[in-house]
Image 1 (cartoon, helix red, strand yellow):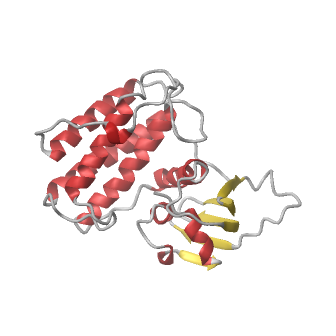
Image 2 (image 1 turned 90 degrees about the vertical axis):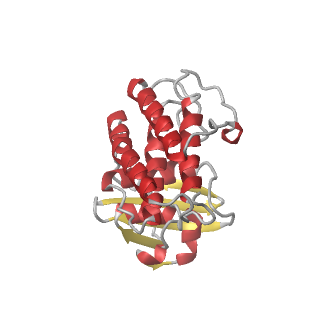
Length: 252
């Protein structure tokens, strides 16, 4: 299993591309336009959601310590500012922080990952990319997530979200699932163990174990990422084997 290793420059580059694209889509949509990929949300809701995440991350990611911050839903955005203008302010301030941030500096996170600031560079790049897609879908667009970024996003779901127990649904799943991103020639094997998971390295851990995939999903890296996040159906990708296992891969 080959891996893409993200860097500060890689994630900041993604933010520089997807941030303005998000803003452009929001500017084109009437404020109450429904966001079809986020049921119950309008474009205004989506814009304020992303702005609040940026504000929350800024409040602790550069502090240089792994202390747990306050809850994000306890933060308050300034009142009386148009949503897109508020988002732009928060985006600009986040980018200023990230430009000067040492990715190795201590920083809290909620996942079974090293408590370093790099986590938030990666997390914000993917948060922005997926919500950029949401915003564009609201105006009948929806460009794919850039292939290398999407592959890193698939990796984030498998090595961060699922091990942290952040599935979209509760349940018990058992078996190995193989994901194949054909456009970047990358694959992942994930063993589902009830409500737990293990990301497998086929070069080192298989040996005598039964590692044959009970389900296989093939598509572009972007489509795999969007399916894991519930934005598109797995049925739009190439699926073989036990489809019931795929419910254990969705996060949100």
